[in-house]
Length: 330
Image (cartoon, rainbow, N blue to C red):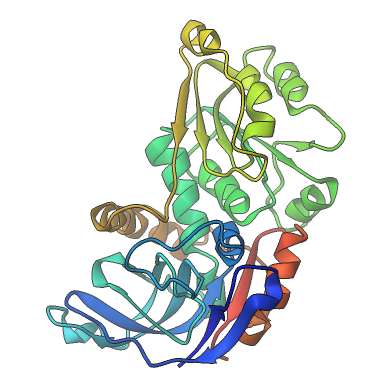
């Protein structure tokens, strides 16, 4: 099979198209013929040597999600799975023509969607659902602030929040990305151009000083103080990303007085049982909404597998509004 390998830590040019042996499925596993995968910030960090793959995942092949066809099965897996069109999350190895994963971690592709579209689904929508609903406890009628609303997770979170009954969705992004969101039918109830306005001030004004019920934060330290000021009493913040830094000062008295909840979450390092539960929730709560059209993948741009370095450079420039997808097979 062909795969993209990280030959050494560095800039995008360290990504190299290589011929490797096809992986062999072990007990409880399936081998998937990959048709599409998508970029995530973790891939960029791994390429730079800052985010090593978890145990059991390929150490030098990035890629945390895929869409494709089950091509072979390991011991204990029903052979009727062969030929199924599936998608899913992996700890690595997505930038390749073949991968192996646990059979319990795969999710059927929604009827009516193509492989390229489904490559943009697993990481963004599972992260958004898990952060907003499972971890954040978003309930119908509540308000939510989504940072980096034009990102892959951000565009998914807008849809998930609305699908599960959010009363009002605030979001931060650049002016260009806010315009793109509107063009794609993902306009926020309250769009906030973070380069021109203080989201803290906008939220306090729009909520008569109360704040929002829930914040989905993909930025981190640089937003920390204003995040706390933007939450209502007993509000929750779910921290998913750290592109804005990892170190922030915290006034613990604010947490105590206002009974705030701070939740940190990550996908990649979860154990197999947690990934089983996540796949089951995706089958039960996301798949039907994709098939009904309530949820839609948001693909910003598609590159071919051999263009992985170009795709990384594009994403590092923060040009994308939605997911950047790699086409592995035509």
